[in-house]
Length: 438
Image (cartoon, rainbow, N blue to C red; front, side):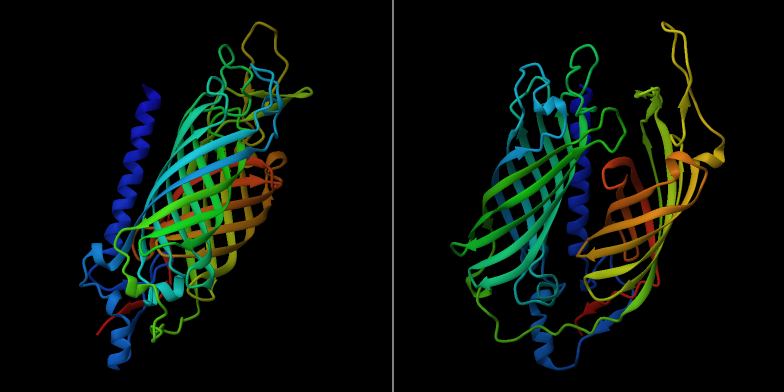
């Protein structure tokens, strides 16, 4: 019952987010050149031909006509990286768990060809998807279902019929069979019935007919719970991708090369400042003797990032970040105890659970979504666990022109999970252009 409730909560969340994206796309003020959105307004030249270039961008068109709507189905047979003894054969069946298969159903909407947004963002599309996974061990791992947001775009076009594209998926997966000491004690990979789902894929897009495209490519997937439960070894796969895309309202006259290139305003390079407040919780394995012992407590994590970022162009930002964190699990310790009694875990003084770090940041800016990476280290800290070289992967989802939802994941030494970073942010001095038609 609990698993079903979690599943419906996730479906509802993604449905609301997709409806929200549609709402942004239907804004009556014009075409938003997002990256979260911008404050500056850039008017087009008075010339009629420039206005004509934006004819398909005008906000007076209904949502159903302003974008190309797409439905796709995919099959992804894959290989599981056997990074854990359970996957290598220490399981109920005494066989390696190496193969996976998933089927996907996606809806997305795409900027129309030969428009300003299409020229800037390479035919970007965004939407939501549903996937069903099998790993060949339903009893110990389960057959999870994933719900995710997605976005993709063209990397390069070889011909009018063939292009190289990318796509990312980000969401939740439910229906796992997690570790249980009494019922499922071999599975030391998955510790919770709900896990994050992250995927990136690169594929060739072949235009077969007016409405139909073929996709063939390679994908990488990662499942984990962000250290909210133990164990959290995570599961990683590499898959082949083959699928069909049905472009519901794509017209033949949009497929050819346009005689005119739409006018793109010059980007105003500037420095913006992102302030992010985040929080989450995590579990901790504490060193005791020559092994790790799982603490039964869930520890609070909260912090902030302050990012001065130089906006190079419509699609890229680089900069630094001041990163502050309180990690309630940092430097937790345990002591000898009498067998048969409860082992106790102790927290150190507060200053040993606080840290201040500096990281280098880079962000890839697209409509509605911004993907960021960071690499840094704590320069002020108590000791021990917080003397860390850390990495951050983050997704920023635009809410208003300068506010956003922040979903991040912190690891250290490029391998060990730290914690989730769930929060909100605001962008100061935001000068991304907003293109309107006179």
